[in-house]
Length: 114
Length: 112
Image 1 (tube, chains in turn cyan, blue):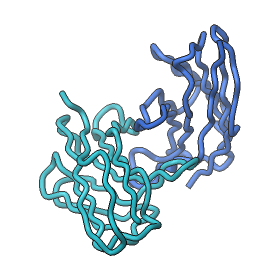
Image 2 (cartoon, helix red, strand yellow; image 1 turned 90 degrees about the vertical axis):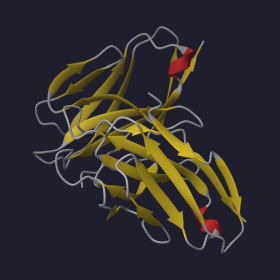
Image 3 (cartoon, one colour; image 1 turned 60 degrees about the vertical axis):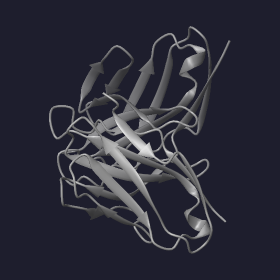
Image 4 (cartoon, each protein chain N blue to C red; image 1 turned 135 degrees about the horizontal axis):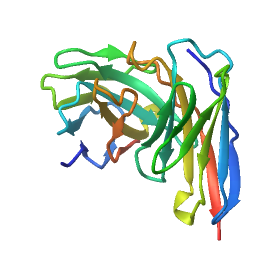
């Protein structure tokens, strides 16, 4: 199993450009999450999904949109990138089964907005 | 949401036992305590989770007193590879899925 994968690993955008980050998991997990991590900080939840076709806002949702059209994929979109969105983005997933609270994280996407 | 307080940093030497304490005074009845480890340039990795008393796995032990207002992550005989940031999270993992808050964590430095 590949676990949780993220595409791309690195990206540089200019202010106002748009992009989509892709997260994929092959563990048949119901729940998926998008976080951002800024230098010296913990992770902050952007959006999450409790199942295919559902999404919900987290702690810092402004400027981002998400979609969960397929159970294994969770997309994070930036419609008009801003320098404040320069960060490392992590995707995570988890099962609704026995190990509740145990999230599996991807390797991250480092995004720079100039 | 239960707020957690951890030391910002800790130093240790190889072979020692490390205990990292997390305070969570307003923990709710349905809240669980979860610890994650994060290496530089990687995503966090689940270490251990518990509700009360003691939980042990192949990596660590988690001690939770009866009042559950704090918890202690114990790493036996650390090595250089245990140098990482450790996060304590408190939340109702069976309820709303958006309430697990990662604080700034504790940066553990293990020296030879």
